[in-house]
Length: 174
Image 1 (cartoon, rainbow, N blue to C red):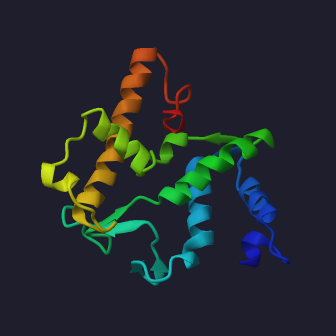
Image 2: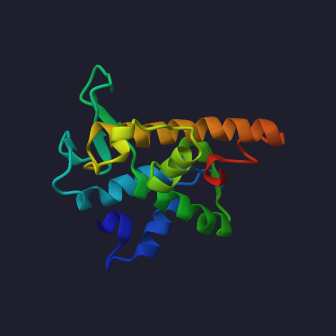
């Protein structure tokens, strides 16, 4: 992808592309994620594909209802969002204000989900704790989706309790 990484390819060129997408020195966090998903889609061979695009960290679940090709699909993009969050500080150090951080989600990963289980917020059925599941099992997809939703609720409660807004305490800091 010379349009994103240059010729010869360098990761630093990707930073320059992101910086070039800033308007008046401001770049929405979702623009970072969009660029990452566009750049790295080809690394997900063998995963779900929609309209010829490999979807990456997207899993099927029957409870997801939509009137289009996304019916049954639950997107997480944990690693892509993690990379997006990791690029915020270098962009800001370069003078680009990354805005709307809450446009990204909390990370649907075992540490975050595990904290909710350990704290008793999520209580799996006893049998679910006694076996291993494939990453695409409905119970795993549900757990990850609940983790994302609960992180949003936790952020709201933390902000209210601390008297902060989403700019002062973005989801990335929760």
